[in-house]
Length: 428
Image (cartoon, rainbow, N blue to C red):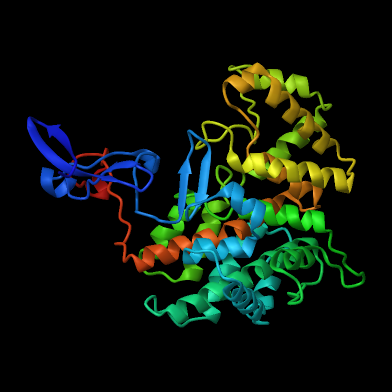
């Protein structure tokens, strides 16, 4: 017998089916609620308790600190895979064979050249333009250079669109960075792997030979793996709802970039560095700010500690902590802000106030530390996040379109004026 949930309104009872996910998550299917009840809707500001879709991509259990991509534990993927291999898994559903991976990597490299006219768009931005604004605009502009609509039922066309955005997106990100710095625009180097290529596009100077550091390349690879997907977050939901109108992949990704730009979403790792700089300017007294964080009457909050989804330790933070330590040790950077970060980390992992409340350092805390150590400016942190999240956005858009999900159209509860009589302007 199928399970039912019973809702009683004004003495009338209505039944709705209960649906269980493969991890025994329970949901109530209310798609017939409004029609069955004659107009009743649910009210769930921020959609915190609303499932907008069925998805086979990512499983997240915040209470137990579990994150899996397509059934694989994030710990196993971070230890054994690389960014592009995990991207293939997330987008297409299975880990690639060696032949599939080689083809995937080569196809992405073949799509890494940008139309030279995009430089005209870059030239139109002021030097002070935020790189996320540039990245969103440039990603949207790809639609103009690729005006043919992708046939979602054509596996070949869909695959081509996937490798095209994976090939071009990091170049757009690097060019936005170069615009800010006033340095020449670097092109992709097809002799390098995906992550090494990102590094050289960001940092190579034409007058000098660029040397890749395997430790920093590996740390960035692992960090971007951890960011590849994270269930129905703000930017991912944005990609799906924009795509539900049958907007193309590039336009939908551009919308996701804009959503990620917000301080409450992708800007969290930048906020960590801004907090560290604030503490440094105030004399570097970590204990003072620990006390401020404990004072409920003080508006100061420690950025990069705790997580709105993970009620225990962020599993991604457990993984990336060791890479952050290794990068700092290898680069031997004398940065007061990073020393403050390590001091804060030590206190938070031992202090009963933070331990009892499970306010552990999260992935944003460690990613901010790594990016700063690599010499990536804080305004580029969210751009790096976007590069990592790109495969997840692609996978979610692809899944939504292949499932033929209906166009997103939330309801509202109207709380405005009742019917009013119109008064002409001369009588007001």
